[in-house]
Length: 206
Image 1 (cartoon, helix red, strand yellow):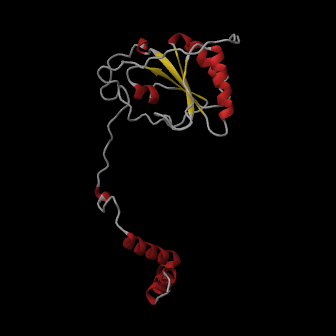
Image 2 (cartoon, one colour):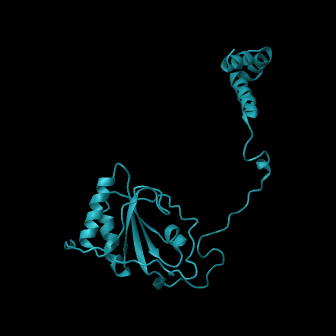
Image 3 (cartoon, helix red, strand yellow):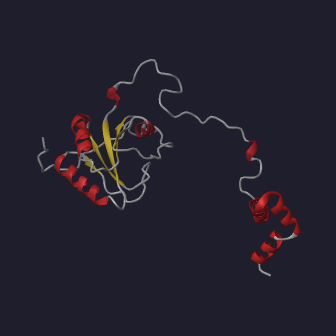
């Protein structure tokens, strides 16, 4: 007799018929499933998880460990990054926007990330730009996003906050896996640097 036949025989045994009468077919299948799960192996989590207390995770939002006594200086922002997200259906739009940016702005243009990279969970490309360009690049991206999701964040000494809490989004937001990002360590630059690598050749439309 096969395992499947044995399961049906057990299901239709007098005991199982009593379950059918008392609790219906669903209860019988549930009881059968529980028995199968119990004999299949042991949970890697053990059998005491229901006793664990619900604890509060450590806060990583800036200004919430101890409320600040004064605002941060806007001059803590040294530059900006724009991350343009795309997928297999929108990569041609991303390619066009990539071309437009390189033709019109003196920025640090990164390469193509066709898989998740760093805190970014979908394909993307990025470009870095100076504070002085913010007032032009943000409205330009708003009008020329081609419907793509775009993350714009400042570069300060707190990259986790830069990616999670100091952000601007064009069109819509999406998850960013920056929870584990940390501030620079000893000997590392306090703020990520950008080095422009494009040579604009097209006059910006005005």
